[in-house]
Image: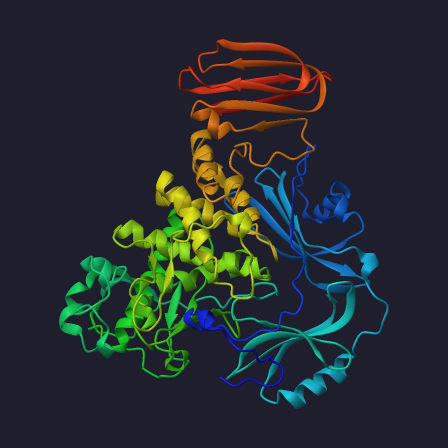
Length: 614
């Protein structure tokens, strides 16, 4: 696709060309990376924050880095764990481009975490902001087919300082949707593809639903190779949709819901509406009977796949306790101008499209689950998908949900992401396993946001192997509400660890921490008290190792006359010691399995309590 001069051209390496880029990945200009987010805990919060109007002032008082930052609320959402507020940073009444503060509260109103990537106001340069009327006129000349959705002055970080700039959000039929940031000379400073990444408040087009009726469907679940337990190869190949004799028997019968209106069953319900908004154009057929039974060589087969798997995913999320993406998403199951690609976008409304090139994308449930996960991120935390690692995280998290579903159906070949759509002559697919033995701290997240998706999927699947789909999907969904622009995988892992309460008690928390530390996404030995801030009076170290019989350590911020008591599950005192040091060690070797309570009284009279599992 040829773009206007706004999109910078560059040569793609052979490795990048080999990567199938879902989500209609159009060239972007990212000359400067938005600053990396920081993770904060707010300690000793005396009272719950029941009025959202006080949240911004409270966190700016409690967190030193935010003491001079002006915040304005951009978005709020509610999850099973509590409330989530996204603030934008402003200087002199002008927004700082993608500078955000995310405040996560529990259901009682206490702050669980704060993530932010704000800038010090004093680094804002003096200068004149571009004039709106002039910028819109110039844009109309270079993009006569472009439709402006929003525009306005912004501060843009140039690597040294914040400079006056002008941001235009726009879309065009052939080009897609973008945020482009200009200087006063109409020179492009930053260009951002919006096919996944939206910064405005979330607005949905809700369904116009007739009667949801149970219908029978024939689908791949999740794909024909998994059903047959074979790898791609003769006779289990695409063959330009001609291989129906081998592949049609691998369809399975399932039930889902569809709308009944005017004597016909339609491929739509409260969560999805099949449409035909992109080439190649195939009508969305209705049925006079409650059945959609099509051969895989018929375009309606891909439509039925989308109807079933989007509805199934949404019903699964609701069963987990989430009300997320509760709107009717528009889907073209045979679109993307016939390309071997798929995407989610929100412009001009939330929608997904799947291309029929190569192996048709909608024939593989992995692709449908992947794209719909972007819709979940968009609903839970719109406007936060910025930064190389943050965008890689979202792609990887979408791969996780696809892998989680496939493995719940059948374990065969579960680590091959897109096992039918990829791993063939059309493109190599991706991995849901750490086949290259990566370690998180050593990774470099560059502009190819698909390079390190494997380590995140492999990490979360370590939790899946310990606790199963239900628990892992819960914490994986919950964490999405807490995201912010340019956050890291480690910070997202801490949000998942925060969500352990959705799974049960202490043993689940320990298993989550152990799984997330497999490839050092969180440090090995991280306390299951989550993140021990240096501000805490006592830090608990290696509680996971203690469960295996290793030594547990307490580290005190100051040396003093501290008192430590360890009590077992039946109330007996196992250890009682008076200390005059800043560190204490306690071995789990020889102790009976069970729950142990560690009560600590500091020299200043402050008390702390930890619960550990042996």
